[in-house]
Length: 403
Ligand code: ZN
Image 1: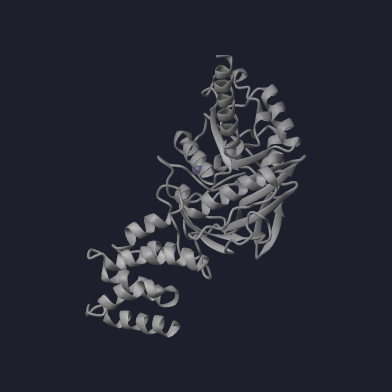
Image 2: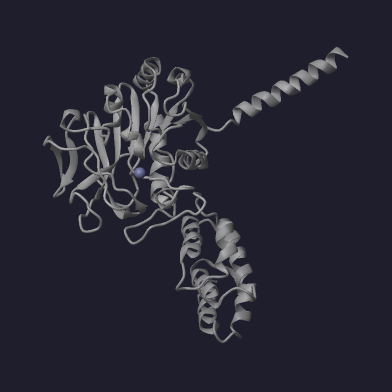
């Protein structure tokens, strides 16, 4: 009898330990609860975006409401590798402030997100961590403006307000430091979804690098005509801080948070803040200067989703499903088994009577370089389809030439 209990106990312990081993990622705390923005919409989105990477396990903690007793907000920061600040509100208690400063000094990672750089205008250490901030009566007493003018970084100590933004718009983000772990491999210019372009930020700007800027065009909604910082990294003690001014949230997130560029830079910045390096690959759908890319559910499209939708493809409408399939094909070049698996999925679409002629033409074009004998029977059948005859014959000649 005793042995049986022991076995049950052992089995229980084993399950417990293996569960611990599979607990995903760096413990992360999103701090929110007061904001001039819709934090109830943004914080769950930030959590999802970070957890999507498989690198972070994220908890959301809310402070008391405005005017509430901040002494009750007393988190044990040392339990976390990363703190994400989605907060703009009442001062925290002195004890909590001190604990936060100790946490960062000792190497804790921090992400400063959008209006979090408006917060705590009088807290010296916090402003050193954000590098630059806006609003809250900030002016020349708080530090210089930093921006690019004619491709030169300017530290401008002239008098004036801290913080402004023109009308919301899509804007081009320009990478200024291309060899930082966060920006390595990203395009030097990419279009961001409709957002506020924070401008005229000012602050101590010590131990800070500006990774990316965006031009605040005065003709497109009241800008400063300067290249304003939008992505920054700061070190404080042993701690690393990633600061993104992007991501103004509406109900459910909004275009700025659905932007694949915002999502990717946040994910990469968060990893860097924890480890000092970035292991995530640049995703296939990262935007270029040509257009904004949205992720409707904040996730990268999977190959299965692309194949589920490619059959409805019409050239004028969208290339996103094809782009997803193409990027997987390119990444598999040289991997025969991997390509064959995709070829089987492509052949299914070719056989599907409901699939559009456009989608079949595009897949035939891809098969002409990566197809194998597996595709030959179905392509032979397509030769009898007047709309696909030319493409099908072309692929057959290429495939037969291979053998
Ligand atoms: Zn905003």
